[in-house]
Structure formats: structure tokens, C-alpha cells
Image (cartoon, rainbow, N blue to C red; front, side):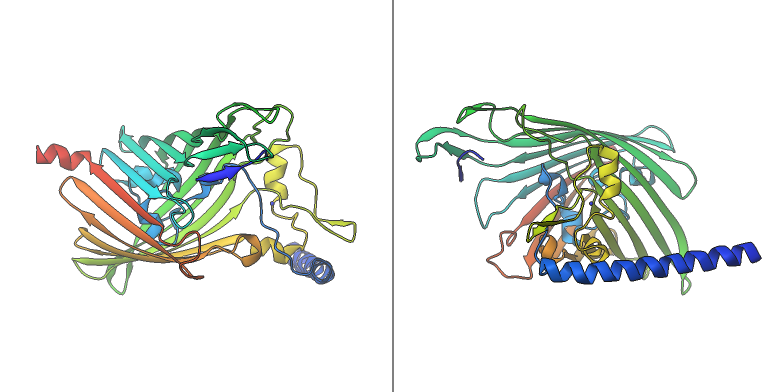
Length: 400
């Protein structure tokens, strides 16, 4: 339970030389500004801020067990959050999955995340999918400045998605996802004279996925890559007169390699690189402001997020989160998974190992994951577990 008060040939040779010289100059200038700026800022933390951060939580057990990788992992019913373009490579016609995550159990006991996915194939090249992501923040008691009770409310946030995925070649697909976001953290009404409303946003995801069968050492294998631009949407405000806040627009790039060890065993290795497309906060030292002011234009905010960090290029690199994961399957019935997630200490300092298992039955699939922070059991993320139940409608028809 929470208690609150009001609250980024010759011509070719000439071009190559020019490009090389330009890069050297940029690196040199950046290195100069970076060293001087770093000295002034003293290496302070400068995390990126956005509203509705629940959109960045891995909602399903499979990705949660693999260090939060998902943009190029093998397609499954929960692909909507990571890369909806993967759906067209699923062999089945229709599927469903439901995930549940008790969140931040080391702090409170009533915050939960639920995720429901559904997909339907229409032909060999087209799939429609939908999902509902629901985040309950538990009971919040509102008090005045003197600790007097005002009311109790259970805030919640949710998204409702619909996606269209299409296969363009035997190996390449893309998808467009449209998303409605609603965040109600106060229940509306007036708190200490300030009128609050539910925050509303409309967003879109653009995704591309590529997979190709190959041979490695004479054995069937597969590699894949994916790119996803997600949560490209309007900022949110909870009052009529407050400044709107950016939602966590995101760029995710990743790859996967799957090796068939024999007829019964295969293993996959995957990695994702993830960057928030949200402007970096400015920093002030001795009345001197470093960094750029957030732009008013939404598309410009996504572009500016690549070059606006107060510490220059080194800080932009720090804003990239890295996930690595592995998945082993035996007879496509039993899976063991593990992974690692890394976020720089100045950008949030989330670092954790993950592990999990999966089981496929005739009709149902069950997945479980567990999170192990590197900082020990005192970390708010410690003891995070995720559970996912999947339903294969094709197997269900066969079973009947």
C-alpha cells in the first residue's frame, strides 16, 4: 500500500576519405566536450523519465526468463509486446496466451500485471492479433498536508492493442500495431484543490522481422533479426494545466541463432539492444545548463533522443540497455531458459539474471520465470515471478 500527498573508383575514394575525416573530427570534438562536461557534472546519475513506465515491463514468462529479449526470438502467442511481425511465421491458425506477474513484491503485496494475447491467421501471409495489458497499482491512501485521510483508491493503467502482420517474402515480414493507453492514478476528482483526470494516449508500433534456415556443420539451423519501434504516441497529462509527459517510446534491435543439435534437442541464443526514444533530462551545475531542452514536436523528441545527453556520446551509449538470453528445448516439449539484463548505473541501474522453464502439453503450454537481481534480495525487483498459460487452438481441434 502506498501513502502519498499531492504530488533521447575516384569519386568513391574521395567520398570515403571525406566520410572518414568527418567521423574523426566528430569523435575528436565529442571526446573534448565529453571530458570537460563529465568533469563538471561529476558523473552524476541522469535517468530518463517518462510516464506510464509499465509499458516497459516484460509481461510474459518466456521473455522474462531470457533477460527480457524478444524482438527476434522464436515466434509465440505473446509476440505482440516484442514484435508483432513474428506472428506470420507461427505454424498454427489461432492461439491465445495469458500472463500474470506479481510486481515489486519486496515493496508491496498488491501490485499486479496481467497480459492477454490473441492471434488469428487469415491466410499464408496475413495475421491479425490483439492484446490487453492491465496494471493494477494496489490501494493508495490519499492524505492532506497534515496527514488527514482524504480517500482510498486503487489506481490502474491499461493498454488495448490491435496489430496487422504481413509476410512479404519467404523470410521477411512486418507489422503495424495501434495502441490505446489509459492511465488513471488518482480516480479523478479534486485533490487539494487540483482537478485530476485519467491520462489518455494513442500510440503505434512499427516492426520488421527476418528469419532464414541455414546449415551449420551440416545441421539444420536458423538465424533471425528484428527491429521494433514501439509506443510512438502522444504525451500524457493528468491535469488540464500541467505539462504533458512523454510515454516510453522505444527502439529495440536484436538477433537470434538457433542450432538443432539432433532430432530431439535444439538451443537458441538471442540478444536485444534497447533504447528509450525519450529526451534526456538537462543537468545544471553552477547555474550552467548542460543538454538540450525537450522539443515541442513529438517526432523531433524521438530524433533528439539520440544526441541530447548532457555528457555527450558516452552518455548516449549508457542509455542503451542490453539483454542476452538462451533457450533449450527437448523434443519441443520441455524448455529451460536463462538470461541477463543490463542497464547502466547512471540510467536506472537495473541489473539482473533471469531463469525459467516451459512445458508444452497437447493443448496447453505453461511457462514460469524468476528474476535474480545482482544486488541481492533487498532489491525491489527480487523475487519477481511470472506465469504464462498458452492455448493452441489447432491442437485443441485435434484433441476433440
